[in-house]
Image (cartoon, rainbow, N blue to C red; front, side, top):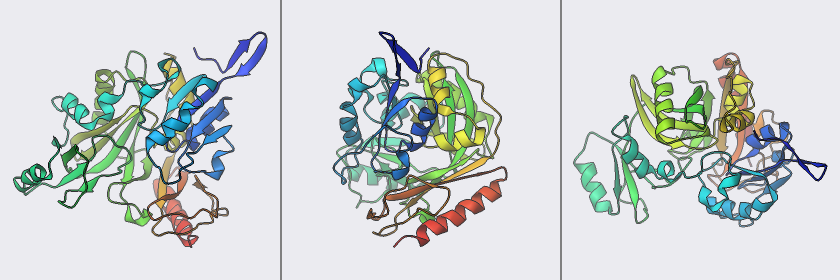
Length: 374
């Protein structure tokens, strides 16, 4: 069992945890409430994170949004902490396995083509090709005129660098051509024990590529938790994939749900973007649940209490934004920060027992955020 307090020569020392990911405010809050000393990475110097972190680690190069930049800055603090948590698809093998609470060797699931080959005989997945030639991609597209396709990287997260197929799209030496499947974008949230059996928590509807939120076509824009049309298939597939991929801790899977068909898109072997929505909907500390299940301590999932809506607003143009007097807004930068088009401005999170109330409140806040942008 992991203890928050350790004794060294008669002195009591609070356990230190390093959280590595692109956005860590919400999970930092949950660990701080548990009494941890929290070090956390972030691409942005978000002002409201300081209430929950003892050190916020932001790369000095404001133009470098690679996960490697977060890994590099986090490596400087590995020796100072007891445990490490990942919230993005970083290269986990750069960090000592003995300190990682969660999945370690994740290349099977982070490499989207390896995952496709591993799962496609057992589950529905969009047809996917790994290519290094756009001419070959175009030939596949032309031979299937009734289907739409996207270009995506072999590694990636958050919908970044995914585009509709076009000859004009810039690609790396290797890229994926994937059939586009229409339906609801859904993510599952579950806890995996060391034997890889799961406690299923819920599923959430994902908001993807919302123009009202200033996002590009496939960019992750938030969640609505729980997903009102969830089915037992989502739970059963999550349980099977947890065992097949030998997952531990808090995990999730991205799906497309088209009526009775459930397609697997990606496996997220880490804390997910729906983390805060799940916590609010179920009134639970998901950080504690992650630690407990990793240590084979049974976790009881409470009944859902309310709906939670999360929206990520992206800058439609270059400019500044003063969000100090707008409620339900998080991940706020200093009002002097100049956002570039496409950068995330802030996160909106609202909850209510009635979904329509939560949605309308989130919409009012969304308008206030963009009205404050100059």
